[in-house]
Length: 298
Image (cartoon, rainbow, N blue to C red):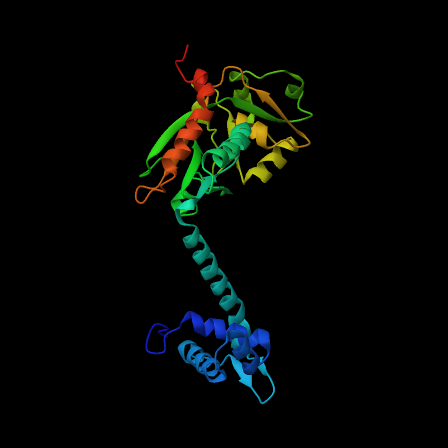
């Protein structure tokens, strides 16, 4: 079936189909759409020819959906909703920027980032969008720019190092270590580490020599925290997680001598959002105090 052939599928066909179903008749749909009843009838017939199925059974007083019509109606509604969303996004244009992140955004700096953005860039909209992907959703076209943490493969994307974050041990609150003020990096060698397989920043290669910690992969942030709270293992994450994910049954303790986590912004190689330089500059400024954590810094 070629829906793009002579009887091609058009958006107005779907609009008229949904309108007839919602209004309950061709006459009422025509009144709501401000077109003639004949135009509605033609568009429904064109849709049926394009799809090769009958969608509606008509009589003098009402219409009812056929079995194919019942199946297709939710898809028609979803298609029209997607087009509406596309038009809204296009209308917002360069005034809206989507900032993707796999977890924790900028941690304790997030609110300051949002407030400063509003003050310094009035008339624009900054939306934080969460996607549990190592690239924050950039590779899937789900955002304009993304916060990522080491280790990450930058692939083809331009990127900027914005700063560093301390590592924290993430413990069940009844873990004996939860009563301590801090944890040593080498102590973690004897632990089972729970790591989010999609976007985690911890791996056994961070420890030189032997033994190395046993690493157990988990799902997203909720599953990861639930397993830690249940005592199934220990987590290692950034200070941003400690700031953003305070939960009953979870205790965070700084790891005194752990290597820091580097934080980067990445963006598209072509048609980068015009607000990208401003976002990068603001993030670097907010992370300026973290440079003392830089490896080799005195």
